[in-house]
Length: 370
Image 1 (cartoon, rainbow, N blue to C red):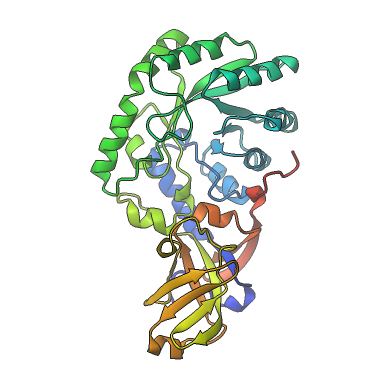
Image 2 (cartoon, rainbow, N blue to C red):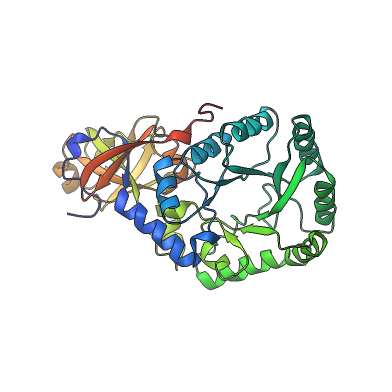
């Protein structure tokens, strides 16, 4: 049997998210090995959103985590994490939710991002009104153009402004370069180095002004193996813990195993050469073009013609069409695992081909209790 096949697939509804426990544990070990120490890791939890995986990372010595939502932060803190960066700028009611998190989890240190004075002022005023200080990281844009302050002299002005506010405590700098996705390592390294070097003079000046080495959190999964070569930075891979088709096929030098699949079944054979599976938009991420959504591991020759909410329509050869039966099980490797996980309430846990547990995808919700 192949690594992904279940001994008793009849125990699993379809479509269902499968987590392969041994492979997740192997990927965590690989993350630590590449980083050189668990102390350097600040893994993002947005890929799995699951406390059981956070607990495994804690057991591996990882103590710092990154997330995107207040719900993810609550999930991580509830799993026992001592330090959490919400890698997002908090606005509106999310500012009050940050203080609710701090009250509920007093043993966890929380931080968030700012990239402008207005956000910093709002968080400062809310902090002062509660007699508290809030930890913040400066979010720096070194080329992705999604969030972050530009890499120019005004970054120093933002640092000085943040440092002048009694309600804020400067924690460090966050630099995410998710736009760098060169497949070959040397090209990816050259691009990541060039982008990072734009920030270096400003980091040096911030360090001179604050009088200590601020915490620098750099990169994501694509650039993980590049930034690990910088001894003084923290690393924040995320997708690596589950891995997917999109990253697995694209980046060399990353020894991670696919650890999450979708189990799907044949529900119809409406015409010769056409097979329909129960894998639609609501069960696997569909933001990419149709050719970049899923790979069926146990069906070698097919074309995904289309998807709707609950259906995936395949074209197969005559021999395959005749051999495929209604109810047959296929195992789909997602192109993009992060939004795929967010579509499921639970993951079925697989070990040695057997169903051994079920884990709730706790932080797929935008709100847990706070």
